[in-house]
Length: 494
Image (cartoon, rainbow, N blue to C red; front, top):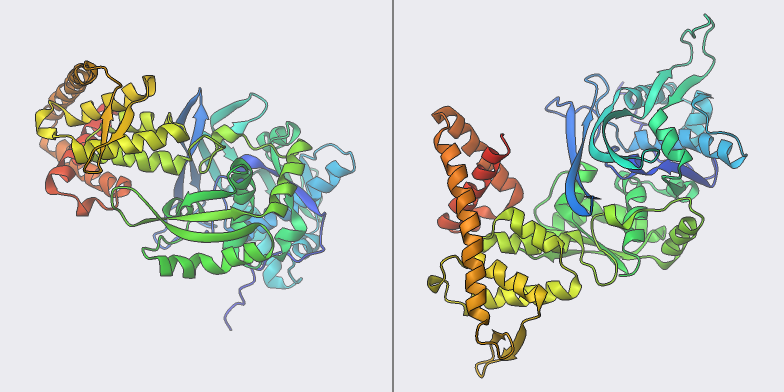
């Protein structure tokens, strides 16, 4: 008889405290994925890339999750198990006790708090969940916060330092009567310093869909960060990577995949509404998920923040920003547009991230003007001219006036030297770019044929990752961007 699958049931309401404390880094990292387990390709590593503001600059950071071959990756049901353990920690803290480094927990009580029956299968599942959490390693590249040192850590972490199952022998020779779980020291340190989220455990317990439960801690941070805008936008492909679900290509399939879970989150009051919208940029068929705030949920998050129980930092989050600022998605799309116009990726990304809302609106109009009204054949370097135009606008805003034909024309007041100054800056920037390209091309020419072939293959793969619609570009545009990526790989020493 096939074994009954019981590991994915959500916790049942009424078991445990009303709210639980959850360490924030782990809760928002994508550590618990929807698929989890042992992948079909038997891979044991999964890398998640995030955005962090470090030293005043938004950069990419990563966390590599390394799973054991026997137990695989943590899944949403393991998050249920983890939350049930933290419910005991939260109860201890609420009583005024110290955060326990080691917990002795009854298997039956852990199962009850997850809303599961006391069957043999569920006891076995619980043991596997504990061992999976204990054997999974996180290699952080500035992705996990060390609240004690107040810095993003480059280190190796685990959720539990140790797990001893019921029935195994303790150091003193006696037999463990319960599961013994040692919380990791870094996690306890973050708890002590208040780097945590406060999760409504009762509401979480009512959720039945795995995607719904995986999104709860993420939404708590995202919606707080975007509380002034009334909505939060997330590129669908980025959301799919965090959840570790299949990336669908068409809106109907995305709706079928996410709809039941997002509708459930709406019914439970986490969000007011949601939508799938086209994400502009490079003409690619990219989509974003728009989460509309629920006033009740947002009020609850803000109450927790005022109590200093959960204080998400606004400068280390992706997505929609505060009034006057632009979201990471918007900056990414505008940067894509500059790259498509031939601007060096590093220059494009840096400029896009520095813009506020008003500057982005103006910059978008300048780019449209550049595309539609400038004769590129007369310029020594159209990309350098475009960047100089954008930088000049930041120093003193360029004025727009309408032509009789209806198109926009840029002027710089009555200053006849404006375009000459822009051209001078473009030539200077072009000189720097050409020196970089010449130096890098010299390194490329010194490579052995096999090394060059390997790098070209990597550049092709990277192009598909960064620009999924590149196959719709002209051959010239595609080759130009491949060369940019190849140069970057060579300069990075990869």
